[in-house]
Length: 128
Image (cartoon, rainbow, N blue to C red; front, side):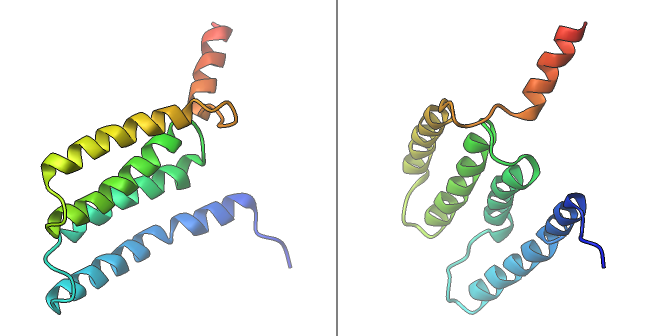
């Protein structure tokens, strides 16, 4: 019996995304219908979260995903808070601006690698 290759493992993880997204939307819809959670635009909210998670799933952890991933995950959480009346848009937007600034500072850490696409572009320019 052979071991699955690294490519097969990555493909298996990527095929989980759609079913989990559909299940999450269904759960959110059911919770809204039952009145357990007030009306939330689940497609928008989960879409933000999925973009954040996909940035890590597709590119791994690097200087760009350290900013993009958490930003969209936090945006998703703040969207729920706004839609449930716990915060207003006037509070949500400044929080997001602060979050972007903090994430950009974190991305400056030398232990976080540069994205592969930046390194590839630099090598291509050097070869010309």
